[in-house]
Image 1 (cartoon, one colour):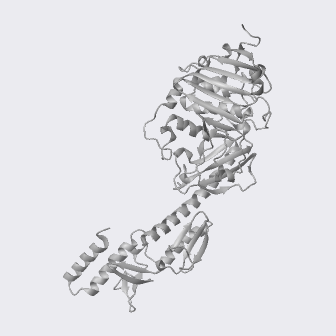
Image 2 (cartoon, rainbow, N blue to C red):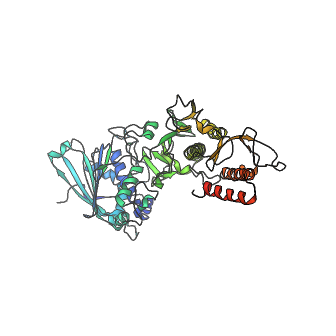
Image 3 (tube, rainbow, N blue to C red):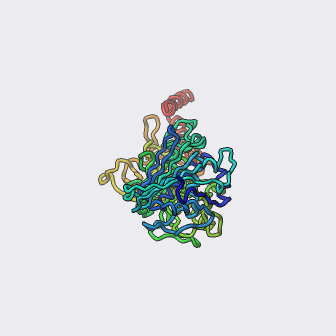
Length: 526
């Protein structure tokens, strides 16, 4: 028996249908995002997404306020203009979707969409069935959705009074879903440098949902703390596993420090982080823009590094930007980007400058730490010059990037190394009287204390180095071959060998033998 109010019809703005007709499998996570966003707007505290490709169905159920059959009529009126209030009824959440496009995005991925819902304190539920495949055929031929009816019925059950929920059942999954879950070429590793497109479908879907959905940060997230992110109030589970926002981790480099930033009419807060190494996977690099706690588009560096200077450590940077005000009306229909405006361009310029500053900071710190660490561990600096002076350049570079310099003695220090960089505490510990700072050149089981001087190498008998009366080796800092930052020490040792050979050998044969043996001993087994 046909019940009053049924069947129903969908009314829709034609430009939305046109957009839907261009759907591909890459939009599958976005369709799930839209369904969960609707649950968020309905004040749900829990959403369960269950995907069963073998049974060819997906169920998305939330415990939001639910709908009456009359409210479902409004749900079916999909328009290109805002609908409803800007905040949710129960919790006052800032609404994510106000155009009613949410459930329409699901149509390309199933043959039939079944919607079941009941509101709080009601013993009536309804079940509506939408032949979704008729709306968007896989051949990309779009049917006028207003020509298709939505069949359904209502049922009364006193047991439903204590419940309130909405359930979406996607049945008869289309080839677009199969394409998304189809195994990709290449070996999967969640920590690999590969693009997530090579990951298995379930892992890829999990990552993409965590990029876009309104979710809590993982417990202990430094990024979440820096952003002062309050609990979302909604848990989302994918096949039973709770989802948390993607967090590349690492140290917070910069943040808005409490007070939001205003650029034009755009108000926002941000936090920038680094792991001090390349961020994996590739898709986690850059800043994620969020509006109403929902991720918009892919992560971005705001075109920094594409034109002009390239930054060697830009791919070490991640973070989030939370739009608090000013871009709600600029969001595009697919909610993946913003329309251009002078204010938006000013906003982009703000982050280009900010990221440029942080990339410069990271480059300096990483270079200084790398050189200090490698020199200390190898016990050999490639550059010719006083060890203390060479180290001083990089220690001062770290100091200019905000590091505190702590000077200790061998007796008082717990540090065995002459210089240690503590990034966590932003300190550089320098053990002033460490033997490492003694200027010495070791060669063929001999060590020579060094004094560094300057003289005219073109007129001197010994242009590169010479022995002083006190037995110390004098090294000419103006000698051209010693100025290389990578091969200076090698040339110094070669010239020292020549100097010793000329002083110790009584003839050419002895000099040749000495040089051959010394060269083999010094360089032959490296």
